Length: 536
Image 1 (tube, one colour):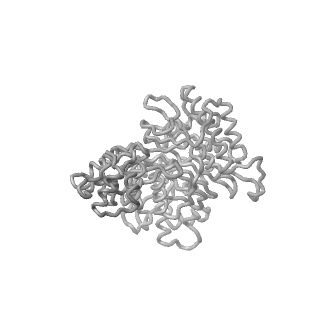
Image 2 (cartoon, rainbow, N blue to C red):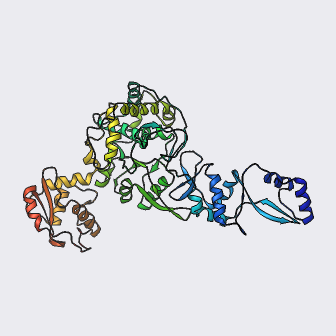
Image 3 (cartoon, one colour):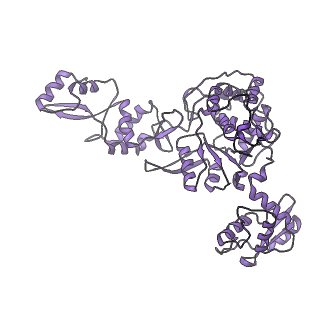
């Protein structure tokens, strides 16, 4: 029953009790229309309190992901884990916590803020977490999804239980744009980017746009490619082209600098997964990119790590697409085979000498967002109506992506994004250098030092064999490990690279495939000696 001001004044006066905020403010809060939840205490279990909170908060934007409670961030495009201190005041926007207190001869229900201990208990309670709606993705535009009955449709605004997606539209778009008009929109958008090859790089650029727009078309657990944008000089447009892929589906684009070490990149990747982000853009990478963390990330369906500030570990599904830009950037073989490349070639000596017909920046992309979204949906819609024709090529590293996104790109008339990149050797410089080294080798045995001399003579492995003196132990080890990765592999000229022997007696050969098979029968494997430069 509502508490009357007269009764409250009489009881408090009789008990000689003082309350901050005044008697009237207490009565007003207690007579609020918000739901009332009794705090845990005598004869009141924490689990019962947690259940009642969850039943209310699940209707007010509190979700669970990976066994942790989240709310949507202020930008409405990602998630923020709820800390105990956050929960104490967050609940008060939607309910009134109270504790029964005896004042004089009466028992009154007085409102209280829950303690930090209670908040910690609630956030650790399975009774609380399990009652919250699960959330895996956040979208700032209506994006397409394949339903369990195989139909394709645009997600409705709000929470979609089947796809576990929360859609908070920032703009609307024409859902009936014809295919011809859609292609013109993208052709105009990309018209001033200096693609280095025929149509392959442009097809990859379009594929990145459709991939981020149509991530809901991929089956659960499907892997996505890394998109790498390479330019021959600063100002070629690689970062803006990457933003063209992200902005239509997600609005304003956040960029990350090139990671400096494995700890930093691990933290960035985990943060992207925790926040339910759909992309991470590593901008302006230089030198050689060889990251075991990144390699593991792009081949993982789930990702885990410890959340800073919450003292809990997180493990959940990730739907993050990685985009990388760089000038003269080279990558490891493992990243190369999981990537699609865009190459831009600027002819002008200085970027500022280029002349453009229009301004294309972040602000312009946001104003064009509705038209680009309409075009991307037209590609998906018409591909679906045409019976979902397949692509001309497949890809072993991301087969599901190839048969859906790759197929849509070709159907839209942009060529095949899965064609072999002409810049493959530049992007995977180690692989290209090993191929050249094997081509120069004959069937006569060659010692390790002789192999180093041959590589230097041909200008190979410059990042590993700098200078002309003897290699240091760590340089020998790095070069040895690289060679070991290619032991007994067959190269494009049908020559097999073989490593035989152990330690200082190790020898290197290159045989025609048929002859190498017979000789490799006597191969005894890898040395277990950690001092051996070829030992893993």
